[in-house]
Image (spheres, rainbow, N blue to C red):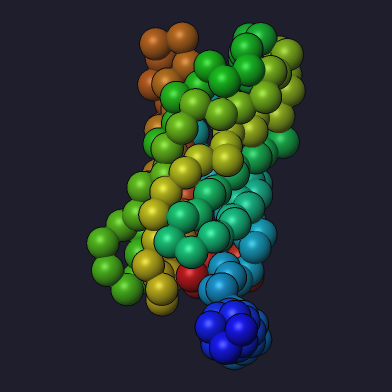
Amino acid sequence: MRGKRIGSGAALLAGTLAVTGLVFAPSAAAVTPTTATTTANCGLFGGGAATLTATQSGTAATLTLSSTAITAPIPIGANSISSTLTMANSTGAARVFSGTVNPAMPTGAPIVVGPLNGTVAAGDSLDFYKGSLKMVVFGITVTCTSSGPQAPGPFVF
């Protein structure tokens, strides 16, 4: 009987410590801001206001870029744009987000790419300005850049 009490007491103590650890554990870092705007220039393919949306889960992050000023010149199928978004990082090396995620877009529809996956480190400060977005659509490469910093400021992870 004594063995059962020790085993039960040890299990109760372990459970209490686990719950206490969760209560006092630091919360996960979150990117701020979660949305920023910029002006994207995609050369012959157009340009104008664009919105970037960021999410973070630990060191994994995603970025989505959308623009009503940059539109699909022809119908584009879902997940058919290969995108590479390079973000300038004021605290170190540039960060690259990539993927082939996009919704289906009829001719004239606003361009949306992402969420594109990448890796970040605590303290990264990422801005599309001095970065670029490269999209490959039907074998044609479109490169977009920004003429100024994003607002309200860089994404801080």
